[in-house]
Image 1 (cartoon, rainbow, N blue to C red):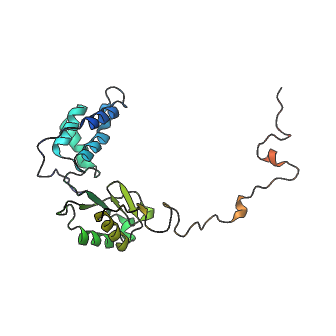
Image 2: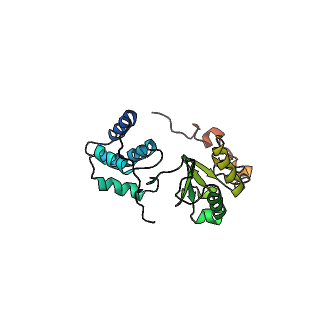
Image 3: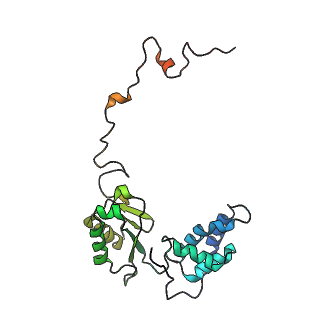
Length: 226
């Protein structure tokens, strides 16, 4: 993984809103006394949401102060996990999966769409609408190739469907997340093709034994109470 650094241009300050501070303290209260630092990841995530999708240095330091942690410890967490963006992102931030399953299914063509419609990786468009970055596996290999845009997954993509999704977002429409082909979640394309013989699901009853007994329903062989 490449070195991740804080953005050169930083806002001068950060403070949690009252609502977010209350939320953060509720997360901390879920842990035993002395273990509040375990809430560092969700609280960093909340700070990122408040900051418009990225983590300024002052936000990282505010989280450290809230949790009583050394600032370098929180910085280590923020720079390790790619879920935390260390520089400004667009209103719609595209995370492009470039690992092997997606590449084998045509992700390289999706990357060309991102270059054409958004521009260079890790740069925000002039209107502030889009940015994109390549990430490691997002855990949707069955539905490759795919991207994550903000909190939503868009799967089973082609260059055409990704282009449509980006155009819909620009136009203020809400494209449907999930598979962009005719299947439900990660179900087989074209429907089930194994274990489809109805006979394998039929219940047979041995000769001389009632159906209820064969299913544990209280037959003659059940022990009687004393």
